[in-house]
Length: 329
Image 1 (cartoon, rainbow, N blue to C red):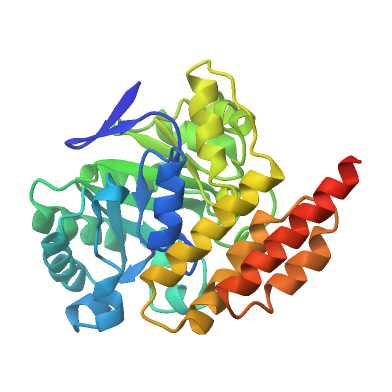
Image 2 (spheres, rainbow, N blue to C red; image 1 turned 120 degrees about the vertical axis):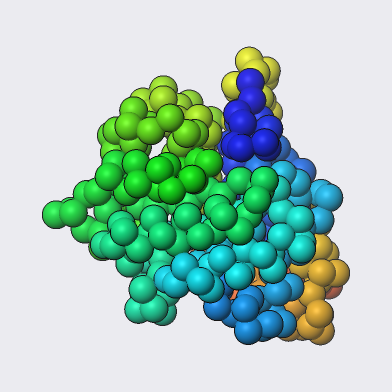
């Protein structure tokens, strides 16, 4: 099965969430390789794009391996958003996404991200300005259930954004006040799905085929988005795709996990403009996530944060595999 977001056709399995400082190009490529049907860039400042920030602009590049892919923008001023969209179109994204759900203080304090859940009028104006600039490129918006438990307004927000021309809405079933704690509210996603005619993408607490299918069934959503559930686990997309197709799925062995972890490390290093040592500083957290859940992983994960070269990562992976094998004897 497939879902249309504007003129973009997406397989109805699971898609990768935009995650700042996590879902960089190497991460996106790994997730696409293992079955993510759609990915989104890290969050990019609309104002930064307009002021030609070199780092911000580099985040907008879309490679063939990542398509279909969206570039996600955040901002609180319609004029800057309109101009940023024009600039981003030069990179030929399949979709432009607007972040209205980020809960971090440095984004909220600028009036962007989830702060826009408190100002539906401005959110609508930002969306409308982006849609006008985007031409035939679909514009989607990612929101939360509300600002806090006393202001759950995702339905009202989604209706307004649909009227402003949004081609799809992603709903993270948590309030800004929750950040990433507690349990995602599946019911609010169901309410949004039943209130709008455009596709709704459900986000929150999905980390397996079982939880993904539950999200589809309980919300009626058009697509499911996975964020933290993909940490060190790009295999989750293959698991979901296999299950939805009625195919058998075999989880990766620890040996396979370490091979993929090292492949991921090589990608990070090759795509970085920094030295190997500095690139490994960014890769450390990913290495630790691949080891999560295994015997002795706490100790090894701690050692991951001391890695300074790829050779050290190879040695640590080999040692980790030996430990797991010894447990089988």
